[in-house]
Amino acid sequence: LELARFLADHGDGAQRAQAVELAQQAYAKRATIHTADVLAWALYRNGDPYAAWPFMEEALRLGTQDAALHWRAAEIARAADMLPLAEHHAAAAHTINPVLAASR
Image (cartoon, rainbow, N blue to C red; front, side):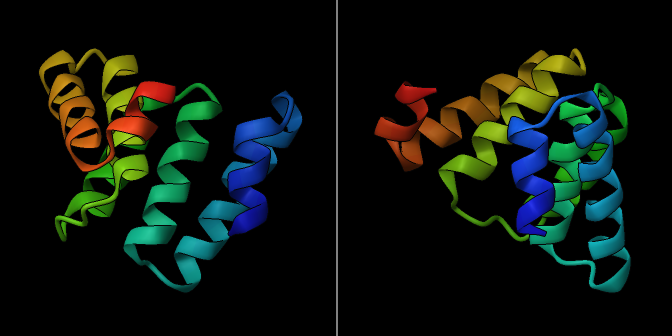
């Protein structure tokens, strides 16, 4: 799972596709908010924010107060043209951790 997140963040096109595959495998083995988050981020970074959003919704379902999670949700929502949701999650990220939100 850590490799999938790393490749999604830092990889080239082929490595981002590999990130999606790794995240899908991790999600298939154990569907948690963490695997859903990584899968959503990998799909988004691989150019598919619309496929990513349902997994991000799943990652958010428990109301976890994690600024980075909300920041990723804002990025995915913005890319999927869901601007009110993007604004909501960006504000949530800022409320939880103003330093993290400002640094991105």
